Length: 198
Image (cartoon, rainbow, N blue to C red; front, side, top):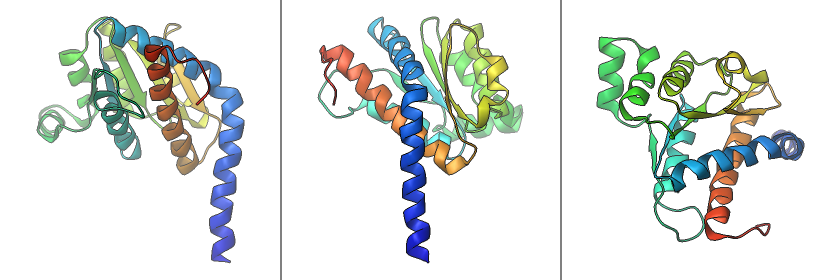
């Protein structure tokens, strides 16, 4: 019984990834171009999210500053989820909704990209970060699920919305991780002039 339950997780995850490949390949390609334009002009990616999405923000930044699968120059990326002194100071002195937006206004510049990750698309602090990014003339790449939530209304035509077509948080997060790997691979392929499939 338990083995069947576990097998179903793998089957459901694989099915969603196959479905998402057809739905998300275009916005992921658009996001790669936006991020590539940012980093090749000396910009950086600021990434944020809560819980598992915070871990994804850190994962993305680690792959950019370090490396993904091959050697290349370091790329600018900062996870806004990691500085506990800033996060707790802002949450205490202002409110939790401001923990990312104040960092975006402090660190973001025109030409930078905000990677905004919210499984529901309704995280108030991520939405506030999107607003702050727009104030700084930044492009937003949003990773969501469940129809995109309030993020749908918050994004501009120049932003990129990668919305996983599923309601379950675990499944959405699994596709978010694959998407992050696709973003890293796509940027690396463009930087290295490699257009072949992995």
